Image 1 (cartoon, rainbow, N blue to C red):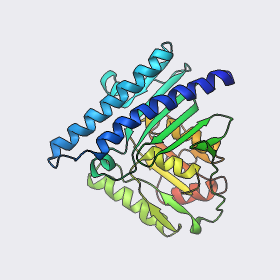
Image 2: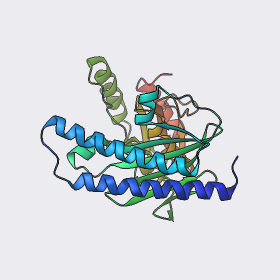
Image 3: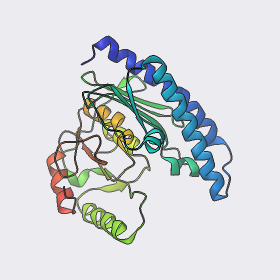
Length: 273
């Protein structure tokens, strides 16, 4: 395990990279979006790529011996296997649909795993100017102020976040909406922000009590947010109730009081191993 000085430096370098990438996102966000479909996709791709290049170049300059897993990078090189080496996982632009529509829930997500354990997390929303940070064992922060998950202990008074995902085949949509249908009878209401990383941060700062998502893009969506939730006193786990696996494309998060009730509700809704 790295010492505290190293961890503080890892965080500082990641924050600097996230803020620089955030500038690129902010500029692209406020540009007039091309109405043609291709134009939007191009803008997203250009912004995405520019941000990822910037972040990886900066991290590699400081830590050439570390490993890297990123959305564009892994797609180009096949799915990277996670080892015990310090590994940076980067989503340069989480919430791309929001970005295209000018909906202000977009972020840069940077996570560092050491010994396969998420250890440093940075999630930065440059539009709302919210910077979520955490180091394992040292608490979670929003713009430098400590944050805590909610103290809600009743499912029926809880706010739940999830996402519909990108697949629109009938069986996937039916499974997704059936799950939501089942859960809606047990919670107060539902939110879909369009960003997995920001949903995790919303659990960490108590805006949301519960979150789950199945089949998101990859570990870069959750590596940063997972540390932030845990350091805010929340739980991150597999939707089946088992241990969280950063590589599994399955995640659930809750405050400290609702994990068992939420797991039971998820099981009832048809979430299986």
